[in-house]
Length: 78
Image 1 (tube, rainbow, N blue to C red):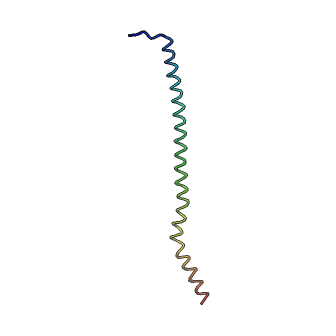
Image 2 (cartoon, one colour):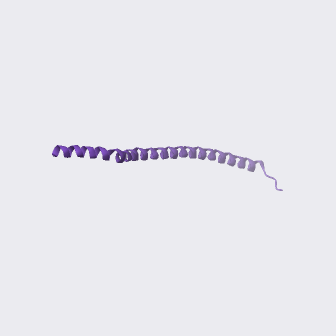
Image 3 (cartoon, one colour):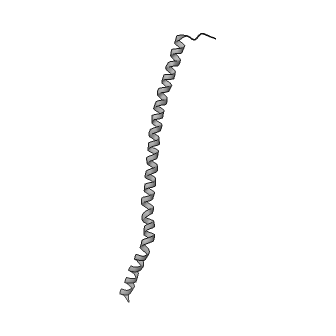
């Protein structure tokens, strides 16, 4: 088995430590990106909710109100 010199071990140890630091930075960046993506999903769902709920409620409640208003208008014309 070949003898590994101290200089080579130190170089490998430094490379491993640099890799660990880089991995920690990447993991932190990924967690920040995940948080950002989660908030984007929440906001998009909220926007859809804000847009479609009034439209659905309008389809439910407006026809009787419009029909009543038209009936009152027709009564005024007669």
